[in-house]
Image (tube, rainbow, N blue to C red):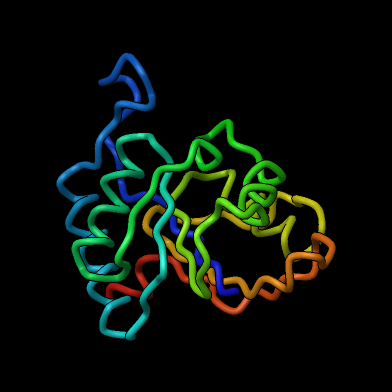
Amino acid sequence: MELYLIRHGIAADREAYERDRDRPLTEEGRKKTQKVAKRLRSLDLNFDLILTSPLIRARQTAEILLSQHLAPLLQESEHLAPEGELQAWLAWLNSKTAPQGQRLALVGHQPNLGDWTETLVWGTPKGAIAVKKAGVIGLELPNPDAPIGRSTLFWLSPPRMLLS
């Protein structure tokens, strides 16, 4: 399975909102995310499903990806919220309730996305991978029975590489 980890776009300042989960994308964040989504479409990248954190900025990012016809379905997952855990998400992925597909996009937050990437590739987070806002990571996940740390990193792109 191909797994794409996508960080939400540029969001409003924390100070402007009482709750972090309510921070929306800024106008610049929307525009850059739209350009990234168009670039992904031009590369013929599409997903069987987009899973998103329920936080506003991630949901808006996922909706922009959906608007570019990069996936037929969008679903929220609490596992992708900042307090979400990789092990819980993997248990869901391996359950019979998870939608089946070969290409899945996850829209979430840093440091989770960087930590999840490192854990899936190396078996433990090392604090070495930082996903820029609207950045994309691509991983090839082995079969569900394979131990953590056996995934292959095949794409690590900051948004500026997708905007040019």
